[in-house]
Amino acid sequence: MGLYVPWNFHEPQPGQYQFSGEHDVEYFIKLAQELGLLVILRPGPYICAEWDMGGLPAWLLLKESIILRSSDPGYLAAVDKWLGVLLPKMKPLLYQNGGPIITVQVYVE
Image (cartoon, rainbow, N blue to C red; front, side, top):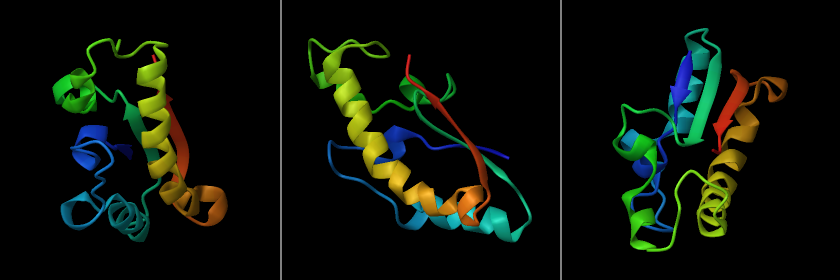
């Protein structure tokens, strides 16, 4: 199963991460494993056109000079920080570590 992890859902304000309750992506992935599903993890930063701003957090727009989905240093620093929080949570859930995540698809355009 493909699983989007929307950045704006998990970091609604800069540095304020939400990973409990309905935001508990680790629990959801473990549940998928219990059901015998393999996971293609899609953590973004841009995930798809169906999410507002493709899942990018709106607070990025507060930085006037930022150029989203580019090699802009401010944008890439924010992406690095986001993935630096999320990906360590996903590492134990990788297939090679006994979890159901068989691949990670990251879009940094």
